[in-house]
Image 1 (cartoon, one colour):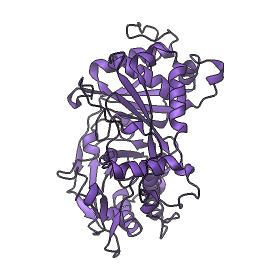
Image 2 (image 1 turned 45 degrees about the horizontal axis):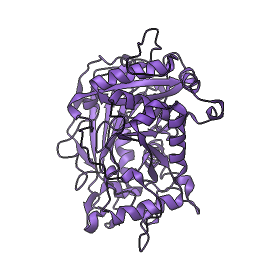
Image 3 (image 1 turned 45 degrees about the vertical axis):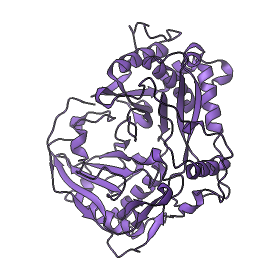
Image 4 (image 1 turned 180 degrees about the horizontal axis):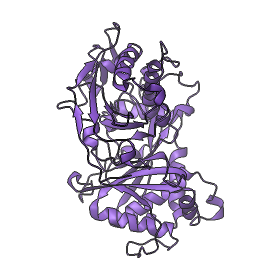
Length: 461
């Protein structure tokens, strides 16, 4: 992708899109999973669409604007505003005020972005304009959407969501509903279900599981990443890259999932790059979708947050000095801990401890959105060329999170792309560590030379 690309975006004034019909005026409580501190931020998503000759003369802005208003009749809580009650409890005041919508035009074609679209995207701030006073969690629109027409007839759909309202699965459900109505349906094929009480704390609450993801860890050594020195990079992992990592594992671990293997490797490389003291605790936090853990299942159409921040904890010394299989076993155990009881215990912890933020000191968070379905969202112009998170490092604490995003590189190889956000010097060390692993120079160390390396780095800003 051409990260040096510069173009101009002409925007209309932001407008509020309200539901197309009157909707209930009521207050709806979020779940005790939804309103935790670690979800009180805005998360950006971006979708790129090609020109479709069958849609010649059809304006994607007008189509999506109308479909959005109709979809909000069914998803009317999105048109409301959050407010906070006793005990930091969040609730949606279903005012019907609407969501923010921006119409825009860019003097650029989709082809000019290049063949391999992945974060970070050039001129990102112009593709999703940060409307003044809209970034807050309370009393602000819950969705911001910008649709930007391209010179070629394609368009970009960018969205920012208040994460307390939905996770990736819930957001894709909403976006698919907008797409279905844009393509002519009168209502969503999957009716939305609120039922947030299903993930509320018990009465009385009782924390029955260990939740080290919410340990209170003071940042005594200033290890939280400074926002003003961030480097953004994306890395591609296909079959050959994953095979190279698997060669570091004993035979009995070779059948582990690509997520587990890659996460263990990246945690180790990132820790080496950040150079913590060997006795300092480090954490890997894996986002685990818990929808399959419930019996009876949650109702189809539930669009709230249903995931856990499962965590593995060790010292930097143990992580970096042990073989990769050590980190892999920690990752696997952390994921296996998540169950229905774990989720119930988590809701109870939120209520008893004031809805804390997950631990960010010396933590690395990974979220796999390969199966979320962003790229399948169709507004009438076919599937997205790229669909998914707009950048890495997003969250209430910048620099902590990375996403695994489905991707096909410019050679046609299927795999995933992962945006990473690190301080500039640490990013250079991270690239060397990863290069050492993928080119079989073992064990990976910070000073390992990187000649004859695979071309991992896809894009940077």
